[in-house]
Amino acid sequence: MTHNVFVFGTLKRGQPNFYLLEDTSNGLAVYQAEGATEEKFPVVIASRCNIPFMLPVAGKGKNVVGEIYKVDDSMLNRLDILERKAEILDRREINVISNGRTIICWCYHLVNHKKELQELPTIDNYDTNGSHGLPYIPNSLEICDDFSDVQIPK
Image: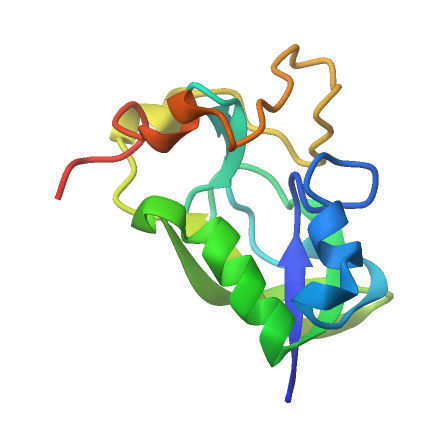
């Protein structure tokens, strides 16, 4: 089975985690097109590792630009492992507009986020080397295992 996945942050081409989509040992990922979310969502850069997070607050923020990939079950499972680390993200369906068509895609949102994150500047087209001055720090570092600065404890 295949699934449409919308990536807007470190998984995009040219970004630090794109290698996961390229690695065929993770499964199949085929680039489909660039797109933008139909609804506005806030994407903020937060945590000790400068991770771009989409907050599940539809109607706020910006129409987020990203890439649509068709992935198989194996790749979707691999993305779930990365994105659901520490159970801070949830995979949800959203509508993405691409070439005048609406495509339903899976996308990862930060769950139980601290309300003050909604006050951070929002971005519509993430680049780790963007003008925001907050380059992504790889999750392999121990400091990236603590998300208490972005999530409300359970």
